[in-house]
Length: 209
Image (tube, rainbow, N blue to C red; front, side, top):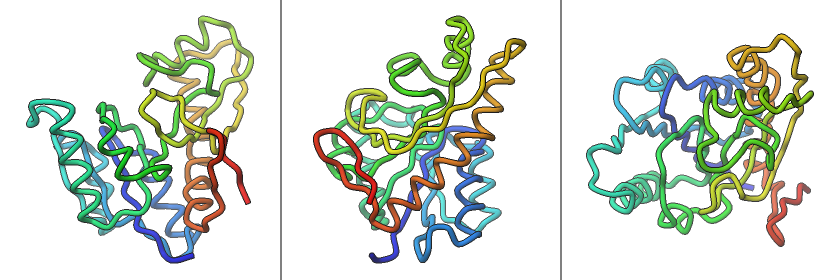
């Protein structure tokens, strides 16, 4: 088990990035470190979080590339050049193709704000996930950390945590509770498992040593 270089990919405020930074400061990842933050657009607050914590960052703006293919190639090259071992999608809302997955097989993880396979897949992101959960009247929702594969939200599940849905919840209130009680707990935990080589994948299932 050697120290891992971790890249966190962001598109917005970076609250999950902050949860990972805080976990690293508590020593949860051992000798592994967040060594790169990649933003899909300039000016997002996540870049300030990176700067405030001395983490190198780069902006790969989707609009500056003609196609998903060109963008994915640039991203894969950036991550490879930085000698990244684990890629964490933390509110990264840009579509990428198999070039990235093939460069980092079973080494890209994502946090999704629902209990997959509920409320996931194409079109389910941000508040839409929580609106759908409330429309359905579910009594629990939560978050899932999974390995990213070419099919949206369909990769092997690493960790899940359930969160109570309250009768008076708004999408915003449910989103906040799921972030605080689930996402910020299981995302650092999943990164820790990866850093300590505790994750193996077989038949599209994750096994934790």
